[in-house]
Amino acid sequence: MSQSVRTSPDGCGQALSEAYDTALLDLDGVVYAGGNAIAHAVESLAVARAGGMHLAYVTNNALRTPDAVAVHLTELGIPTGADDVITSAQAVARLISEQVPAGARVLVIGGEGLRVALRERGLEPVESADDDPAAVVQGYGGPELPWGRFAEASYAVARGVPWFASNTDLTIPGARGIGPGNGAAVEVVRIATGAEPQVAGKPLPPMHRETILRTGAERPLVVGDRLDTDIEGAFNGEVDSLLVLTGVTDGAQLLAAPPQHRPTYVDADLRGLLTGQPEVVADGDGFRCGGWAAVARAERLELDGGGAALDGLRALCAAAWTVAGEGSCALDAGKALARLGL
Image (cartoon, rainbow, N blue to C red; front, side, top):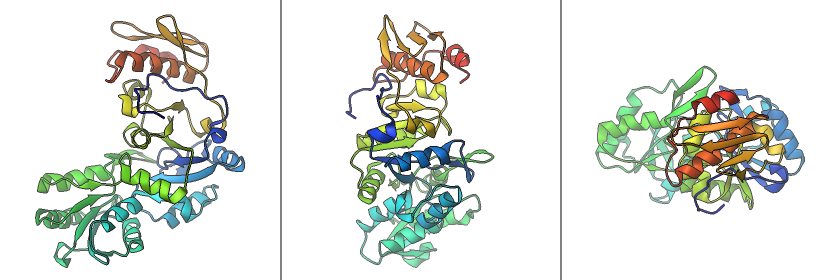
């Protein structure tokens, strides 16, 4: 994928699982939500794997270890080894190891996933700002993380200890809805100290580097549900992406996406890996996909025709992104999206 401004989703004449050698799959909101498999995920991944596609699971959630994630996925019916899981904890641990002495102490504000990743890099996790840490690292610690952990981070950071964050996702999807993510916790320490952390996770380069190093992917396809992490991460890594609508992104957010948040492909769920993608073509002063035609007017996006709702969404994306150019589309799309049930 080039860094030129994307003005439309791409088409693909073969199944995506055949066009790309490796799927770099986000977990929360793509494969599962709140621990339960998302509809069609297990079956779709099984077919993609049987066809020869390598499946790698790339998550900004630093709470669990790769072993624990692999066990969970296997229990859901998705056979997975720990080597198939790449976490932001691993990416941030590598980043820290490149900047502190071997064997250095690192104050951990987060879960076991961070501790295991740090030990993998020969670093020593510690619990207090008084343990003379060479760095502070913050990652998602789950809803039970005590408030006092943020104080420990703040004490060390205020003393000038280098501060790292596995990721800065403000939210995380769960079985009961959308909850606060590690980015919300990072804000607590930022407010207390006025400092800025070095961040490793999606959409930033350290996470992409970690993923490519561990998977050896040559033709990767990033698959995610978030525009500001998964899709922007693919943009920064100059690789193609598939947005699935099973997580946090809705139609309105997709239409308003700036260039770095525009996916190569759009589909409802992971069944999109198993099919080609329809072409979106220019049609007069608008765009057509399947039986739908979309056009940008002075104040709104208009949609005419019928057929598969996703084709209508793809046509609307082309109309919205073309008129927005390098910016974000602010045209009213409410009526058009309502026609699609989105």
